[in-house]
Length: 249
Length: 248
Ligand SMILES: Nc1ncnc2c1ncn2[C@@H]1O[C@H](COP(=O)(O)OP(=O)(O)O)[C@@H](O)[C@H]1O
Ligand SMILES: [Mg+2]
Image (tube, rainbow over all chains, first blue to last red; front, top):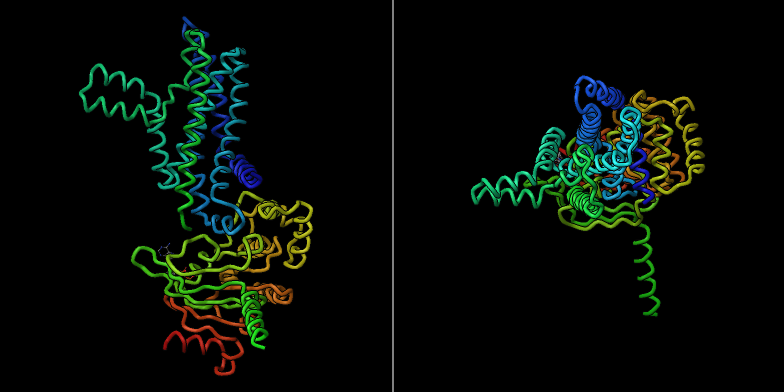
């Protein structure tokens, strides 16, 4: 536990000492604030558009940071020969993987707190908004787990590409299934079922539309979604550790 | 009488076991079809300085990595008489987290060994005097360090846990004569403290006085292991012996 904490805090330090992060972050804040402007240029449904655009920006910047920082997080350590130093010390590969995951998660948490604050200043505070923002953060932890998983066996570029693909597919698994059910051939249906079963279903974590169209939340469904995300993340980390433990340096 | 004899035998057997820090038997390492290490047999005794010598690409680093668990052996036995907490290691690449200051790196390293912060700081104080590190240097980011400074920082992180068994991979390479002397003096100090030292080197000059025993490895095979003093009895110098061994 102590070791995981050490790696996590060190990873946190590594990321926040990188100037690139601040550039992305300042850009993110500006984009979130520009939601107000987007809201005012459209005549109707001004508030809705502001909120919608704000959420979208927060989600995109979560994705950008998770993808660009996460895909090289483990790779860098191997490439720069830091693993020789680290793994000659009493620390396990499990500690390392979990520490890396928690370190970047911590960065994402802090960034989301600030972005949420900016969002609330712009769109006003509502408890429902907070719920949406929490699930966006949860999704970025989820995406991060996918990224770390790929990064144990492919290069950062391919990791980036595959993770982004999984993110996109994860948004539409249910749509794909339904589409196949009504329009597709048998083979396509099986394919869609397969994707629906195994690919992460990020749609479950997307509460944006429910808030925007003022649909009441089903809290049992939310609790199940939360449990689903945690379970899937745990599994991904488990396989990441299994693969990483086999690695030689 | 017989019982006493047996008892004495067991006693010596136990003692000799106890005196060994590292025992390697028939160890091999294959990567795909390529045999990097073939049938390695080697012992390192407690308190000795063992020089593991061989040309570039002979397999020295690979063996150390296997001992430390960074790589897996393909076959054979390896017994290490101490756990990771008592081991110090300086890799042939003295690269560390560039975004940390020297002091932060050492604190991080010390904490990996469960050392208390004030204990680590005390260690840092000691080291920086020995290795002529200024307080200011330790407060600077590692990315601004020179190669020599990184090497010295490498020594500090390798020794932060007061290890009883120390692995140094090419500790002399890429250093100027003064840097080499500093490192040599440091190794002499460690020797005096009774540490067991295992170092890899393809550089042979100035290490004759340092080693108690040497092993020579070439193309993944150990050609000889002998006491330094035996080598010097039969040969003019180490370099001579080394060239003869490799060429024969
Ligand atoms: N992971 C690896 N895969 C394939 N070959 C390797 C690997 N690591 C080292 N080698 C090869 O094994 C040989 C020994 O390397 P090394 O142990 O680094 O030698 P040394 O430290 O004596 O210079 C070299 O020929 C090197 O190319
Ligand atoms: Mg080497």
